[in-house]
Amino acid sequence: MAKKTVNPTRMELTRLKKKLTTARRGHKLLKDKRDELMRQFLDMVRENKALRERVEAGITQSNKNFALARSAMSEEAVRVAFMTPKQEIQLGIDTRNVMSVEIPVFSYQTRTSDENDIYSYGFAFTSSDLDDAVLSLSKLLPDMMHLAESEKSCQLLAAEIEKTRRRVNALEHVMIPEMEENIKYITMKLDEAERSSQIRLMKVKDMMLEEAHHYKEKEEQRAKEQVEF
Image (cartoon, rainbow, N blue to C red; front, side):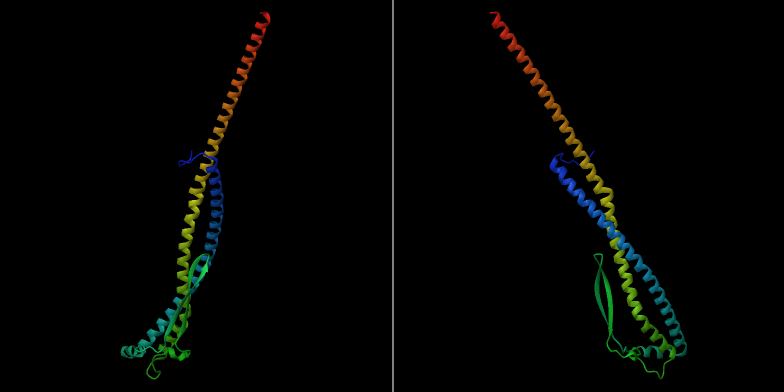
């Protein structure tokens, strides 16, 4: 039995069949989209894992260099060394489309192209370990930007995968079975109505034949009576 009341008419049957065809086509497209999103998501997760390990290793090494510099320099000297930044970075954010998902693309540009502008202090009164720490962090910046981009992309793709999965399940387990059940119900009702109509026609035909037979008998009887008279 249909889950909701439907009009058992041929027009409704035609409409449901077209709707079912569209739903099946949409279900296939959404499944293909979900599978492709999953493939790209897994690629990004693997890339994200490698980037995170590289960034964490670089930050660990930088922290070691900062600790060595701190042991060789006074706290006041370290504070003064980083008091006035020398280099500036401008962050640019763009997007690219991946299966209808707008994922971010980060880029940056330094105020000057001089590599030595990363040092905001003179070399006379600072430790070489401090130079190594600043240099390692500077070299780590592209990977950190890429990691941020990768992690945000993974979050957006995961949300889109979940949304697509819910749509696929709704079509597969709710909408398509319900439309198939309604089509079956309407078809059954139409077949039943057609059988009833045929039975009525057969009964009318039998009644007409019987009436014609009785009429013929009456005519024969009347003709016989006229002859005898």
